[in-house]
Amino acid sequence: MISAKHPSLLLIVFLTFAFGSLFAGLLFGSVDIPFSGVAHALLSPADSIPHQIVWQLRIPRVLAAFACGGLLALAGALLQILLRNPLADPYILGVSGGAAVGALVAMLLGWGLLLTNLTSLAGALAAIAIVFGLSFRAGDWNLYRLLLTGVVLSAGCTALTTLILTLAPASDVKGMLFWLMGDVSRAEELWPAWTTLIVVAALSMLFSGSLNVLSLGQMKARTLGVAVLPLQVGIYFGASLATVAALMLAGAIGFVGLIVPHAVRLLGVSDVRWLLPLSVLLGGGFLTLADTLARTLWAPQQLPVGVLTALLGVPMLLLLLSKKR
Image 1 (tube, rainbow, N blue to C red):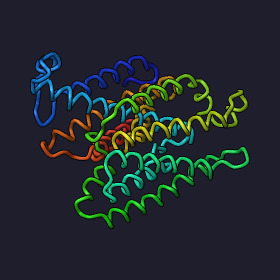
Image 2 (cartoon, helix red, strand yellow):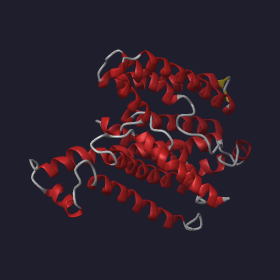
Image 3 (cartoon, helix red, strand yellow):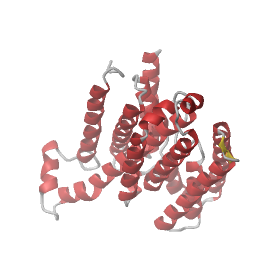
Image 4 (cartoon, rainbow, N blue to C red):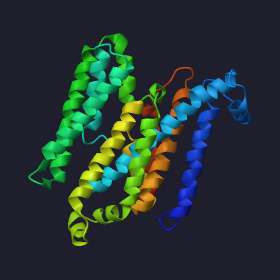
């Protein structure tokens, strides 16, 4: 098995998987395009149907799926380092719950997509502020209090979303459920997500040495001269920003941020310098593949991509766990 002894080989494998999933997203859909037809569609006149399918529908969608998967995997990896807990994921601290409440309230009131995104953003930012404010006291940041506050806030937001779904007209429930389970087809502006992914990933790699030390524990990190508190705050806001960008792009897609970094670790990778880029590649490729399946398995009907991430990701993680035992 490829392991931490061969991270460069693992990088090649993940790059191949990522590009393969992107190309598969261009090939398959409700209208299949043959392998040779993709290049023709890319170069064909703008008024041709293959050109419109590839450029207007599939390229934006695969780019959105890859960015969203990469953001969630990156956020999950950062939070697992921060909390020193392999079960941490981007939604554990209440960010998705706040965003969901904001989005569902807007849908319940019949607001358009722009206002729905804005209220979702407001809910996510409010959750970030509440969790950070309640866990930071007198110049000290307690990670246990951070985790507890996030879990409690998530539970409260879950109750509110259930209440909204109960009160919502039947005609609105399907759209709400698609948001809660993730829907890449609603993505419009891609640049905020890609910009966030590049910036957060670059900054994380810049501080990868300190992140490696922090993963050994706060006491050891302080002993070795790492400014622990500023680093922890930076990780929290970096992971939160990545999560918010993913939520604004495609709604709440579960399991990616939990499963992907954990799977990379189960392959023997613990060095942050390799863990983060490998997580981004695997997360982006995994979500792109899941979205391609979501729109092709029962075409023309589309499945929520969050359902596919769970159906694909859970067996994959269980298989890795059984091999690691």
